[in-house]
Length: 253
Ligand SMILES: C[S@@+](CC[C@H](N)C(=O)[O-])C[C@H]1O[C@@H](n2cnc3c(N)ncnc32)[C@H](O)[C@@H]1O
Image (tube, helix red, strand yellow):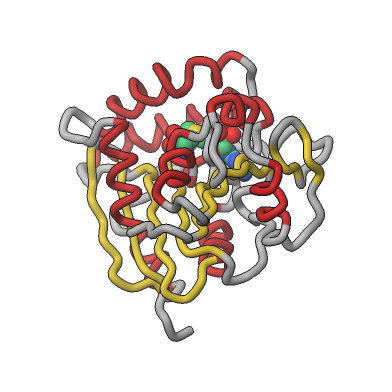
């Protein structure tokens, strides 16, 4: 269970009031989910069974399938994210669509002793599990819409959004929000879908995306979107049908 004072610190960064419930702050009230429904995968995240098996089985197995044999392991993903964000003690980091908090907990360690790692998700079931798995003075959880996170502008040093952007109803608007929330010079890292270039594979990837309710982004699409929003030092890596893209928001905006 995250500490009470850490929640108060998170509340101080919010642009709207939130209610403290079950170990996290909630800005969505009675709404069953954040934003409009986008399909099967998003719906599964809200069930009570998936969060129980998510971190140990679901994510590693599905992730391996999508990243291919050459892609990073789960531990490797966490390390890559922390490395791309260049986290320092004392920083504020936002883990968007944190699920059960695997990445959030690691970020909380990286910003110790006086930083803050915020895990944001729209699903109560995921957050309840995250709260149960967390005992850290530097981690707090927030139930909110990832497309419009209710944080004040220029308040966070780093943003991570893994395995989720393709599930959002408006991913481009989410990227606008991320650029707004980040401080100048802040860093971002994203792991999302990447349609392969070879035409028969493209058709297969598109069909798979439609069936599961997930958008398939093109190669180069996310890096172009980041550059258009003032990000520099943009790096992209591809593993199977996944892309890892990172960047640093310009100091001058
Ligand atoms: C596949 S999980 C990714 C969890 C974690 N980032 C990881 O890499 O393992 C996707 C998460 O996105 C959340 N999600 C989907 N759409 C959302 C939205 N619009 N706002 C907030 N969370 C959302 C789901 O509830 C789910 O926990």
